[in-house]
Length: 411
Image 1 (cartoon, rainbow, N blue to C red):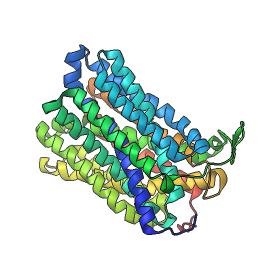
Image 2 (image 1 turned 90 degrees about the vertical axis):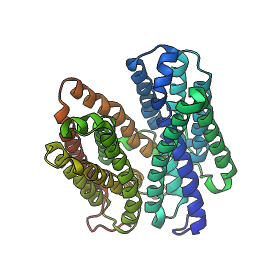
Image 3 (image 1 turned 120 degrees about the horizontal axis):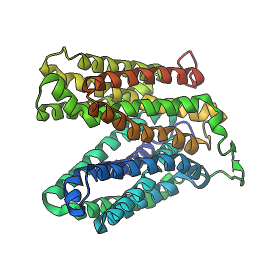
Image 4 (image 1 turned 180 degrees about the vertical axis):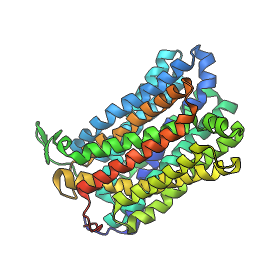
C-alpha cells in the first residue's frame, strides 16, 4: 500500500469501521438498562443480572484473543461481518427469550460477536488507511464507540417507555443487520489480502510466537489497569461522589455525564495530537497523569461541591486525549516487537490479545471496587482509580522504551 491513499478512500474505510465499532458498543449498553423489565418478567435478582454481564465480558475477552488468529488467517472484513452477524443473532435471541437460560444464551452469542471487533477493526485501519491519517482514524474509532453506547442506551430507554424489552432486541438486531449489509456492499474497499499459512503457524512465525515479546505483555497489562480504573469509576461514581460531597444523585449523574462528554471531546483532540506528536508513550503518560491528578483532587474531598463536575470532565478529557496515541503505540508494538514490518500479518493476533485486557479490566475492576464499597471502603474508590492510572502510566512508559525511538520521531 502506498504511503498516501486518496482521502475519500481513507474516509470511507474509517467511516465503515466506525459504524461497525458503534454497533458493537450498542450491544454493551443494550441489556443493563432493561434489567428493571427483565428481572420481574423472569423472576431473577441482581446476582443473576450481574452474571449475565460476567458471561458477556468473559466470552468476549477469551474470544478476542482467539479472534485475532482467525483474522490473520482469513481476513479482517470477513471476520468482522461474522461478528456483526452474531450480534444480530443475539438481538433476535433476546427478543425471543422465554426464560433466564435463553437470556444467558443471548448474552453468550453477543460476547462471541463482540470478540472480533478490536482485532478486525484495527487490522483493517492499519492495512487500508494511510499511515499519516491513522491518528485521526483511531480517534474516530474511539468516538464511534462512545456514540454506540449512546445509541444502545437510547434504544433501551425507548424500550422502557414504549416498546418493551423484546422491541429493544429487535431494534438492535435491525441495526446490526444494516451494518452487515453495509460491510458486504463495501467488499472492494475493505477486502484485505490474506497471508498464505501452513498448519503450524502464520506467515510471520508460530501462532503464539508474538507472546515472547515483553511489549505485548506490557500492553495487555496497561489495558487491564486503565479499564479497571475507569470501569470502577463509571460504575460507582454516583454513590461515591454523593457520599463524599453530599450532592444529589442527579448532580452526581451529571458529573458522570460530564466525564463521558469530556472523554469524547478529548478523543477528538487526541487524534490531532497523535498525528503531530510522535512520542506516543509520553503523550499517553502525560494525559493519564493529568487525569490522575484530577482524581486525587476529587478523592481529598476538599474541592467545593460545584467543582465536582469540572473535575470529572477533566478526568474524561485526559482519558480521551490518551486514546489515539495509545492505539498508535500498540500499532508500533504490533509492527516492531513481533516482525518489524508495517504490513505484519500479526496485526490480528497482537490486537486481539492486547485488547482482551480491556475485557479483563472491565470484568475485574467493577467487581473489586464493588467489594470495597460493600466493605465500607467508599473513600478508597477514587484513590484506587488514581493509583491504577499511575500504574498504567508506568506501564505505558515501559512499553514505549521497548518500541519507540528515543528521538520521538516515527519512521
